[in-house]
Image (cartoon, rainbow, N blue to C red; front, side, top):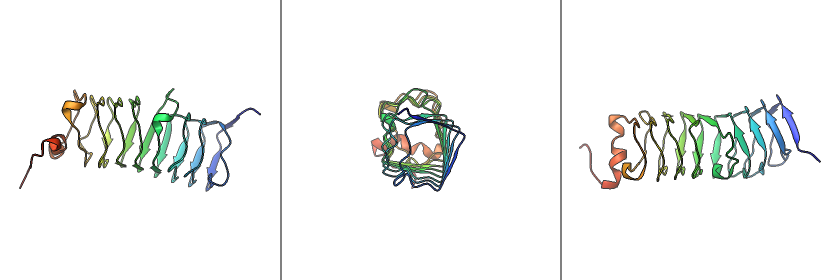
Length: 191
């Protein structure tokens, strides 16, 4: 049986833990208030889809393709985006919570993130050139051997980034955020 092609459909309040999402291509679809937590959505293609008020925590997304996908008011804990199909990978996050999520070695130049909490997210060896972390909490987020050139951290908070271990030419920081660049040196700033 061939995979499904689903276009311009709206899915509202569907529990995909109980009702399995059919494998296939989803284009221009909207998912609202759906629960994908602990579900298997591996090897599915989402193109120009919007996810709003959903939960994707601990879902299996291996081989899944996210192309121009927007997540709003979303919970994503324990995800491995690094196991997704990298072809055309482009996501935007607005008012989202990402905890313990991995973007290991990913190319994220088209990554848009605003008003979100990215706690203990792994960006090791990821290319984030030009990404703007607008009003984002980056508590315990890992930036190791990452490309952060021309990134904008001016409104981000709680980050700890080692300039000696990341490519950061042209990255922007606020004066109050400079402490996050010196943390490894155990320097006390202020009173």
